[in-house]
Length: 444
Image (cartoon, rainbow, N blue to C red; front, side, top):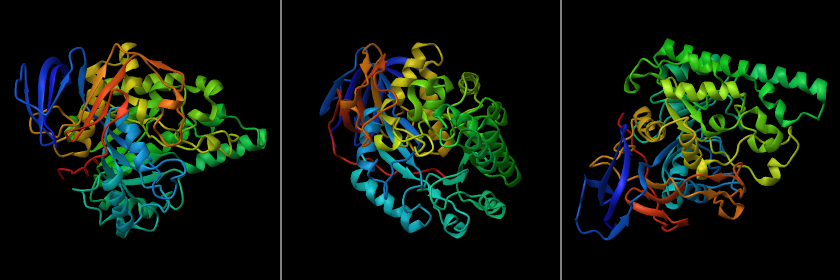
């Protein structure tokens, strides 16, 4: 692996912004100093550019195996690194669902050959696979995923005994999707009775309501407190839910943490008129007040990390009527640029974005030697030009589905380089490596 010297970058790391050189050797950051003149195989002139830790996305759906007509690890990992995401944690609702240790390991084998980014995969929970869940190795698997709301196949966990068994005995972090299925089905029945098949996307946040989210999230928090579970609630979508979380405990000491996603930080229910099913996610994009509450909860520390819930579907699938169109959309390629626009608007600072997309994710999941720009740590880095606008065009989209809810938008910033485990994989708009990323390891 070639050595790399990054010259005169503006480092954003651990709450500070300062100019420095960074020397990378054998995949790791070997030296950080005001000036380094060490010989290197590759020199990157980074004057005027900002160097950030690569994003660690703790929630993606790359659809492989079984749903590869819409996405796969090869395509989505390339979209990720083009967007400055150097590590991802992928969800188990593939086909077949990842409900056994054998199926879990098969996904790792695929990634070891095809993923350009570093990778980990969640073990899936169902009502009838607790024995398999308990075999999960906490040092080599990011966590156990529990859908406490509707999902693909056999993954809705709604049996109280099963939930108690998972929360009491899980050997690692438990990540939950929280929406109350009974409330959703009752709401859907009401809307069908009134509108028949003519339900429109703007009704989505009323069907998958704030009440459904809060009831399920509060249930998960109660279970975690009862059993001492290391709980991580994904994609918080309402302002009300943020009150379930504590901002007075140091992150490393928290037993209950939570995530916000790009779409809930960017869009509101007013955007359904223009975007329709393209912003149909579960949980739903809700009101401006909810968006404001989520942003504020990130600033106060009630919410801990920012991720994407990248979940592609084909254009044909998303073009169907509301009741037939699946929920989810592609986000990894433009997540960082969207956040940098929010920095420009004054919603967050650069230091806060780095904290929520890299530092905190590494702390939450106890990642080994990643998530920070530190000597001895793996070199997972992204260089950005804050003064180079970038317009999203279909021809530039690397996700296999070929579309983006940001299509036509001009971001204020561009990503110039992405380095994964010491390897330059993206440079000046092009993928420039086929060297796979590494399996993530955890200090547990």
